[in-house]
Length: 319
Image 1 (cartoon, rainbow, N blue to C red):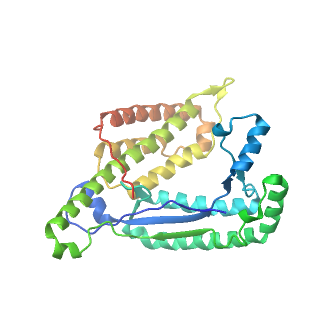
Image 2 (tube, rainbow, N blue to C red):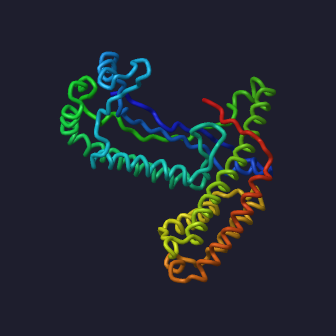
Image 3 (cartoon, one colour):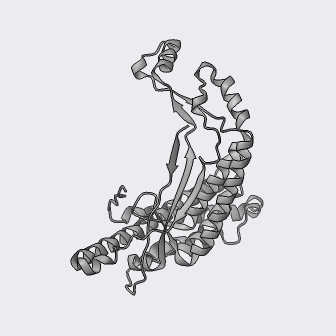
């Protein structure tokens, strides 16, 4: 069974007294990198197996791509393991800002302690879930034997799953190494400028990410509140409202006040839904209309904000 490493991340910054949004972002955040090791659940068929599959479907062997699923990922014990991974990744993304490099996120320095504690908890939950999964590993292998038939091979299955899952994280530095200051001052200064530019670009990434998320949430709720089905108001889930409220809290916590217009748009959207709980919106038609109209106006303003931004392509650098 192959092993894949998912979600590699990078970043760090040092305090500075400069006042640009990028400098503030660099001063107030540090890098966090999340590593998730996960076993490969699918394996490509070998040439003999692909030839048999091609013959069965009367397909051209050169045009056929086929793989076998080694384990049943719908098994409750496997789903429990996957749930921990999803929760860890969602938490990591929710408490951080994007950075210019793939897999890298920026976390506020004041959040590092609580982040470390929460990830430690996720890591322990993952260990326990994998332990429970390993207890029924033999059952999963037997199911695979019956399901795969002649495609089954015991060589695809290690003795245990315990070492194939792992959740790790670290806080690497993105600053130039200090030794450059002494051995190559000019190179050190050039590297400092490069890092500063990356954080300026990270500000743009954060602004775009916030605006796109707000637009998605606002449009979704506005459509639900304005539309009708069979002459009755459309049904909507509580999450259509609560997800928007959670966005406001996250924006307030992570925002670096880099764009006054975006701040105002978020404040307007928050004001529109202030005090409008899911059940109130269902019960009060006038409130429903007012909120829908207000969100539609915010959506239009967001569209203008995004279209007026400079067309600048930020290329994420490959590591």
